[in-house]
Length: 243
Image (tube, rainbow, N blue to C red; front, side):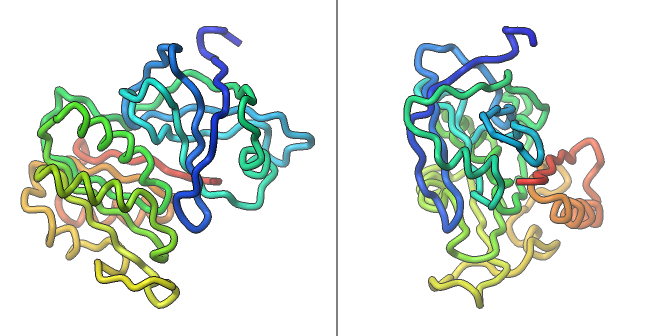
């Protein structure tokens, strides 16, 4: 493998960010790791008899402007890979492949953006919004993030604070199973719908739409967007499968 395409970073720590999701921090200080907000990487772990290989793809949840840590945020499910990831000890070196992917934010495109995320599919938008916030970019952003229960939500406090301080960014969380939530919820409920999008997005015709999440969710949202009359060239998608 081309050595220019791979690099090693030391695992630093993990942080629980929802009922079953964690953010994993890797030390990239002084490494000059460059990527665009929204891109993904491939991570390799030493796994004996892996059922689906010893690597997985993860969107980078940190901003490219964060030169101290590269982070991924993922749900911990019952797989050998996720178990190995969860049990990493600080200082362990992990192999990464050079970030790639076209589901990215480009500053030269200043059209309003509508981000639609299902579950952990919110991670590329976290990278993008963190990047926009630091650079004080004035692009109009509306993020819809759908989770099953209140306890599944990630980045809530951070996104809420960002939206309060930046009038160009609006964050809309919606819960699809409020009856199963242990915490009280006063926000939107139900799946992301045509009516919900119309409620918060004033300029649908001139906006670009970016969809990330499980394949079934992405398919359903694409149908809604098509019904809204959005032009195909303004629609972008990223499937999060097998996580």
